[in-house]
Image (cartoon, rainbow, N blue to C red; front, side, top):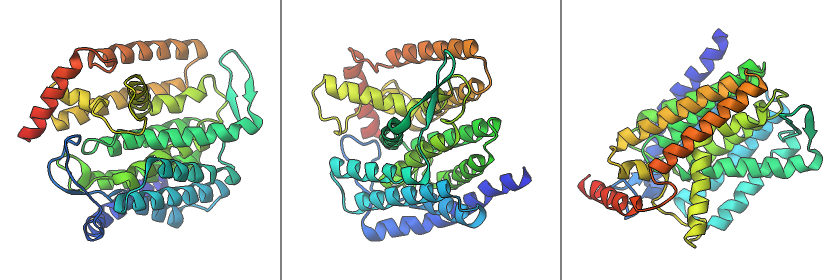
Length: 352
């Protein structure tokens, strides 16, 4: 156990030291996020920061962990997604090219044994997926990759969400006895925390697509490696609960754009963090509020790993009820709220 605690410390220090160099690199390469009417920030910001998280994570893993086949697959896929993100941050890519790259990176996990083999049946028994496990794994990893990417709209939001999710994955994997995944998720958490020193509001650097896609990819893959193969009741839902904020925000965004006949990959200002700003929360207040929701979901996910089936179903029902009620209150489902919130958000941005 003491050795496990040293891993995130090493990754934290490495990420903390590398981030200033990455900031300078982003400025030299022109990887700078310019403000516009859709975005909250009001000045140019380097956006290659996720490279520091990746380096802190990958170097620590290579130095401290035995290179098993699944771990090699994780590093390969993560490297592919980081290369894709760097190219997008520096040169720009179309949404379809990014999606193709994400599919390639997710598909690269399969030959290394990172795929869902079975799902637990809450009514009893196990459902073996066979070849269906391959497309399900690819879909899951790509979905989480894009979910974390979409919530990266406020300083520290995506990184903090990923930090809480990685620590929760470590806790649940520990209860399941998967110490290898515990070590890797703790390393990821340490690398994120070192970067957050520069990314929390007021940020000096953004994750960029390099970082948001890397974090989503790593969390999606680690969930498959550590949790989806558990044989406990409702274990398949644990990763979904852990990543509840980015996944539901993405689902709402897809539905909203489909309903309004807007491009699915097009940006808008209807995400959860935009809604909270529209309600009058400060930049930091909106981020901390979403951190709080993430912590509630994290605790619930840990409980799901140890509760009986009946207790787990009751907990999921309570969570779903509370979440849908809160989403309706902040206007996720549309209505007259939107016009007032847009005006409030615009006035907040112009006065920042």
